[in-house]
Amino acid sequence: MKNFLILHYGFEKPTPEDMAGWNKWFESVADKQVDRGGLPGGREITSTGTKELPFGKDSLTGYTIIEAADLDEAEKIAGECPIVASTLVYEIRK
Image (tube, rainbow, N blue to C red; front, side, top):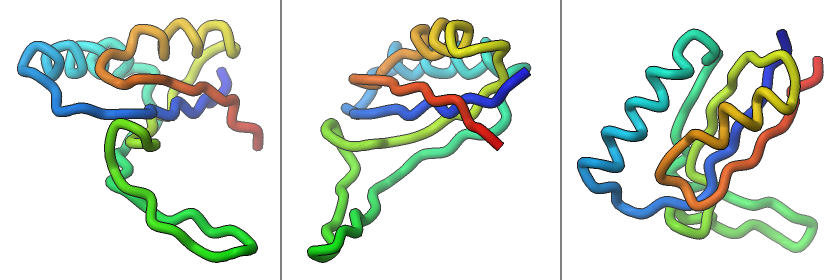
């Protein structure tokens, strides 16, 4: 098995139904999950300076690391995740 990073992009205040779906998804990946966390904002650092990155609908808002056989399986798992506007999946190489 390989590790994959799922980046959750975008957020709007969830309804109780949204939260139920989110919790159901986390339960469904519990045996594959390595780590997860929310990203409440941050900073982008470039050669021209630093800018604040807010939490919200147009930002990176969380991550989940899962185990999967390959990128296709990781994509299938990530594709079932509710609430976020977009989800990105990357293989983590050691």
